[in-house]
Length: 200
Image (cartoon, rainbow, N blue to C red; front, top):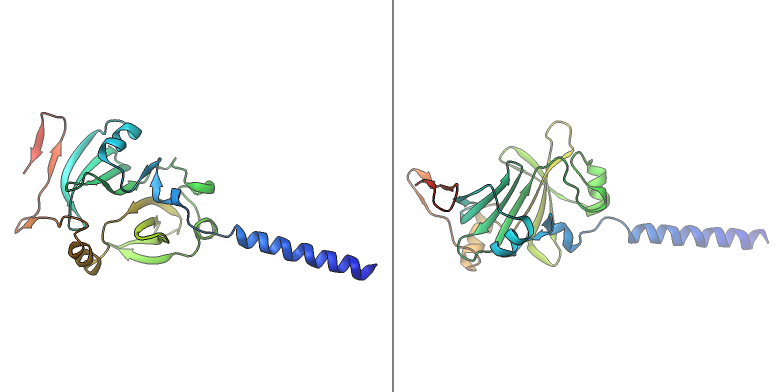
């Protein structure tokens, strides 16, 4: 009788451990969208979902010509000028809620529990945990981490290149239009309305 109970306890323990492994961190499709907006969506789909932005700006981001739509200082969408498709979404809203309770202030343990292990990278003096979509390695979820206290403070989903090697690969594959620069650096145009544009 004691052996039977011990066997049942061991079996229950094994099943519980197996179930916890099934729920361990892992990426899903919704992790590569913010506020329901997915990478690759059209500018029209973006505006249907999010409404009209405050303003837009023609610029170069990671060597690619984009139109940046600013919905607030903490929420911006970058759309390819060539294809009209969403290439990057940036969100630093403190009230933003990602999947499974991940939010502003989330710890490394919470991020690992929900998303799994991340690549750690420093870009422009900022620390990022980078997660790549297993179904499309170009798609990345980049969680900016507070340098001092190591908590999540901003989200970026992107297909834009992170370094020169990726930029060359993207250009060779004609996936994006390379940015344009001159001796004075990148050019910018700010569209405050349909009839008002400032910049060069």
